[in-house]
Length: 283
Image (cartoon, rainbow, N blue to C red; front, side, top):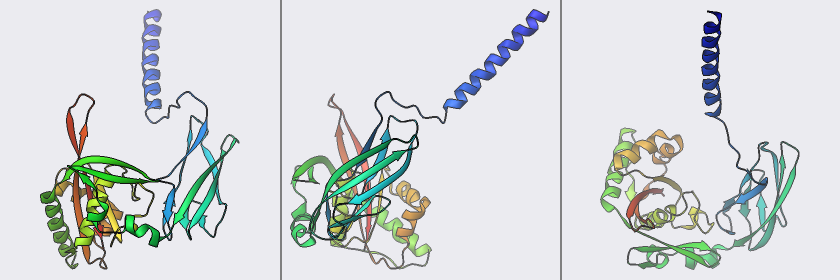
C-alpha cells in the first residue's frame, strides 16, 4: 500500500517539476555558443550636415549583459555623439567614433567606426532633387542608394488605390477630431514613394544611405508600416500607436504624401510573394 502511495507521489512531483521547468524557459534567453563580442550597427557611414545617425550597440554570445556604454568623437566640431549614441553632423569632414562597452561581468570592449559628414549643398543633386531625378527604374525595379557608391534594386509596384483609401480615412479621422483636412502635395507624394521602396529594404526612420528622412523634400514627420493589406487595417494600427496617432493629428501639419509600395519577393524556387510597405509623410 505504502509503495503504491509513494509511487503515485513520485509521479505527481515529477509532473509538477516538469511543468515548472517548461514554464521557466518560456521567458528565458538562450545564448548561442561562441565567443562574446560587441557589434555596432548603423545605417550607412555618412550623415548630412545638421542631421543625425543612430548607433545601435549589441553584446552577442553573453549571459551578463551591458552595464555601461561610452561614446567619443575624435572631432566634435565635425560630428558630436550623445550619451545615447546619436551622431550629429556639424560640418563637412570625417571623424572616428569610439564606442567603449563595459559588461556586467566587468569585461571591457572598444570599437572604432568612421563617419563622414556631408554638406546639404553637395548632397542636393543626389538626395534632394525631384522624385523623377532620384528614382532610377528598370521595368518595375527601383534603385536604392546605400551610401559609399553602393546601390541595390528592389522589384515592385505602387498600389495607388489603397493609397487613396488611406488618404480618405486619414482626413475623415482628422475631421472627427475637429482638425483641418490635409492637402495632397506632389513633392511629398514623390518623397513618400521613395520612402515606400526604401522601407522595403530598411524598415527604419532613417534612409538606407544613412541620411535623415528630412533630406527628402518637404518631410516634417513620417509614419511607416509593414504587412497590412487594407487601408482600414493600417489606419487602425497607426491609431493604436501613440506616436503614429500623434503624427496624424498634429494641427500644424497641412500637407501629406501617401504611398503603398508592394515589393515583389522571389524564392530560390522561383515562387513569388508580395509584401506591403506603407508610408505617410507630413508637411
